[in-house]
Image 1 (spheres, rainbow, N blue to C red):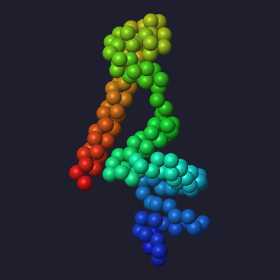
Image 2 (cartoon, rainbow, N blue to C red):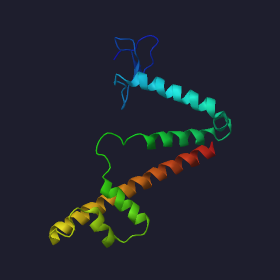
Image 3 (tube, rainbow, N blue to C red):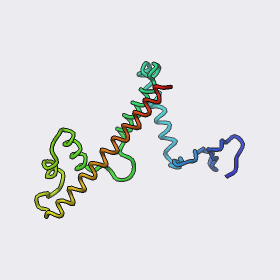
Image 4 (cartoon, rainbow, N blue to C red):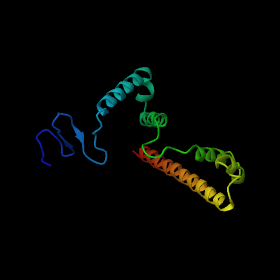
Length: 153
C-alpha cells in the first residue's frame, strides 16, 4: 500500500473518493455513511435537548451511559442470538431459585428425557449460564477499569 499525499498512514483512498480506516473493522458496509449521519443528527438533537449533562465535569460518564443505552437498545452483535432459556435461568438464579426448580422451566420435555439426556441438557444449560455470567463479569471489570482510569486523569 502506497502512502498518498493528504491521506494518513491509517487510511486509504478508494477509487470512489470515500475514506475507510484500515484495521480490524474496515468500513466497507455501503450504509455506514448514512448510519454515521443519523448518529451525528441524534447526537446534535440529544445535546440540544439536554445540554447540561454534556457540559458538566462528568460529561465522559454521561457519554458512556448514553453509549451503554444505545448498545442495549440495539440487537445483539452478529452471531448467535441469546437463548431465551438461558436468559430465564439467569433471571431465576438471580432471584435465588435453586437449580432443581429451574431445570423443568428451562429444558423442554425435561421429565420425558432419559436420565443420560437429562444430565446432558442440565450440563448444557449450566455451561451456557456460566458463560453468560463470565461475560457479564468481564464487562463489569472492563467498565470499572475504565472508570478508575478516567478518575485518575
